[in-house]
Image: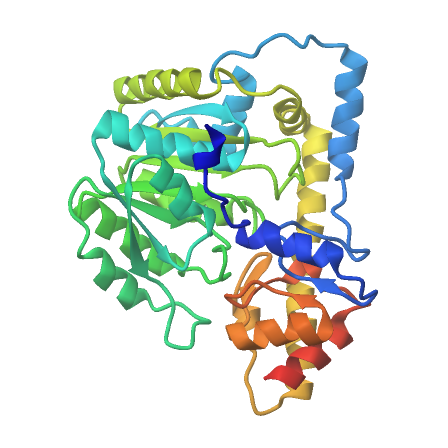
Length: 396
């Protein structure tokens, strides 16, 4: 039977990681993988996570099944983190959440709900977007359409083009929105642009899905949630898919959530029932450990304070790396303005490098970057900055 299965090409990101591992150059640099790295080039375990695990181990808890939608306290914490305490407790806002195995599964759940419950056949997403987005929604049976996102230089936002593209979207079609730290570009709308976009979505009767993978990596936990909170405060309904891979460093634990937010209590309750039905048929219920870590941190005042502090340090380090990279490149290529990299946010940056330049960096210098020119800024450190900038200067 299996002879009829064609050989699938490797994933663009994980395939590049395999090439990096096989590269024997001791000076090789990997800016492709989408995980946070510290100054030593490793993905650290946060101190708040270590302390939470010690607390969990001392509690000698059970390993029995969680409810279909996960632990109630965890789900409540998700809602409050996304909306903030006051909006979460508002009588005009009703939020229901479910724990998922990572943000990827929450996105797939959203696709299943769109198609099965609401008969949505089309989802619009930015061009470019995370490489897995089209695959996730294609696998869920939805047609994927793209809306223009970047300016002609490919390093900044063209908001007028976003609106012009989405004018072709029909009522009851979905639109996928990167809430903050757009992946892969690092280019985000302004507060005023988010307000305009929110009203546009409601006027066009589009179904919004907020992909919230990087809360805390832009400006702060609260500021980064503005696009969602503004949309909900003005009476909108939305699905929110969040992840704790980045802001807790829990990549391997696969911890995330899906939330349905509505001004109507009965609607929210019905949505939770549909979410639970979909979960039951896909993976039955979520894993325990990663969610328990997040739940412990968010409900312990000292651990939560420590988490916020550690997250602030990560965010500030990325900002400093951007500034150092821009300064180093301006010194080497003074005729080119790299300031757009400082205006982008989060771990990722659309560097402006062409596929040909990216290929030269790999073949001549063992520097691994995605073909789109996206770099993971967190992969830069004091040891590789000069070599990286020398190499980029030689190819541009």
